[in-house]
Image (cartoon, rainbow, N blue to C red; front, side):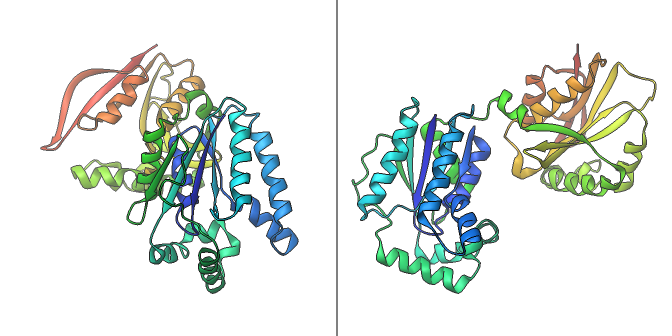
Length: 350
């Protein structure tokens, strides 16, 4: 099993980059404060021995899973021999499984890190940082007391990269890491095990509408088509949901509602032909293979359907590729909506 070690000073963005890297790989994030915060909450103070025990249990149990690897964040004091020894021991455990350890050091200007110390994501995940005065003073003390950036040439690992992320977005940094080390994307089998479709209740249609607007608005701003789901009133969603032979489902990944799929036919007696309309994934969850798995799960739920139909935008090659990967083929004539946008029909016969 592989390990990605994200190293860097306080508030440099280790956890946030790790969150983005988890979205685009078959790796799970174990950021440092996942062990620290429970210990502080229970013991009322930091207890290094308890934190170390929690880490050991997580490492041991995680190695029994089928994931490709783990993302582990650590604030490494390079002037402390004990930190060098600790990282070496953690790396050894993963290497003994036949895995590879990748080291990524993030560096950023202090002024930027002080701003990041106040971000909603950081404070939501790290309760001990919510007293901003203490948190800031502690961060400055730590980097004054310890050397938290490596010297040039100090880290000689075969798989090491240093990234100045002062002016980079976390998702961009995550892509750089993934591409540099060719980290595996989530496998369809693993992703499918983490996903399910959950039927939408009538009182949840307002959330469907909100998610639909968020998901389709970038396309509407690009094409300005009058029929865009981004400007569809909730009443149309309600009418579609009321059709006896059509159902809305939330797409759930790891328990979170990440998108929606609507399947069925406007004819209540038609069982062998079904439409997928609409299907959408929230922008922050796109490009993770979620749409593909959602369609496969719809196929499994409706084994009696012999013909599946949908339409998409010709000018969006990623969408066309998704449906063709699922086995759909283009049928019929192109439908020009405006100078920038054309709709095409897809069909799959089973």
